[in-house]
Length: 234
Image (tube, one colour):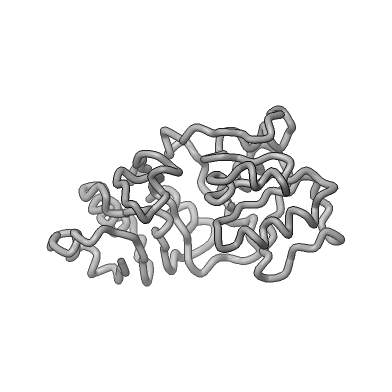
């Protein structure tokens, strides 16, 4: 959500982020002309309820659930985005794309995306959620990630370090980092080691890091040693 808001802000739009958990969604107090809603399956019922609250405005929905069931979502939204909307969201908001179901291609070069603008949030986050990759090359039968987002694509270590340094410069010390947006942070072993070592060299020493990894990482003594000094939870 924050990345999409940042892209729209960079394109010249006035953007506000609302948190339904904190009961901030109130049509009577919100003047925005376009409402963007993202949802996963456990929260989609509430997402549809919110969409109905704004039935007189333009509602665009995206996220994993509606990407899987776009026709269902069309009952509640003016337009539905299937897949990664980074390249099309500005055109959607401006009305240059007319299709009701918009199928998006995956982003090939993740380094071209902007860093999330944390000034759009009401307060500095205690934990920084960072996405360093998208997709997955494994096809586990219990997981929809590969079928939904395609093959694995990764940001460069330099881009990740630059984002962390940018956050530190604008928001203060990096306390905790959550890499669990990635399906498998250690999928490319050399890249993971490089990120950890560049963090140390750049003076980025968070109190804790959380990341997803496949079980075989327990055999990698070098990688485990690198992670153990950074209080990393897998």
